[in-house]
Amino acid sequence: MRRPGNILAAIVTLALAGCGSSAGGADGGGTGGTSGAAGHGGAPGHDAGTTGEITWLANGTPHGIAVGIAARRTATMTDTLEIVGADGVNPGLSIELGAPTTLGGTYTCGADGGTVVLITYDDLVPTSPTCTVTVAFATGADGKPHATGTFEFSFAGADGGAIDVTGGRFDIPVSMEAP
Image (spheres, rainbow, N blue to C red):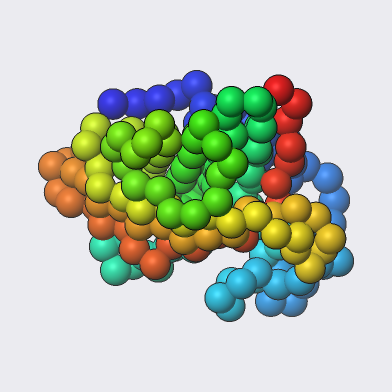
């Protein structure tokens, strides 16, 4: 099952965010910011300190995206967060959370007291995944609000084989959207 709308919009947004000139550091990390977490530097020409980072293991193979975005929307009855990462090399990933109360804590796929958890991986929307996502909000070293957390999920891939994503983590500046 494909979900082109959000993924296409995210890829276009990421592509536009990456436009412009900047020189990458010698380790591949962006200049003017900090190198990415867990030993992953920012992608060349990108500043890992302002674009965030997502890392995980897929069936034991390490993956990392140095260009991630997060958008949060709060309203009277809902709080939503969408995290998207894509770099054209690793599988794309999006995690969407929605709750009738302020987000923060641990969430699982399926009905969870009105909370919605949606995951898209490598342009696939799993129909019956098992998943856990933990999220918190804090001010990052760059002075901007960040969404930080962990994730893991498992589902059947397009070829019928299992996709097990473990050890996932993110630390991404959050843009706030008006309701």
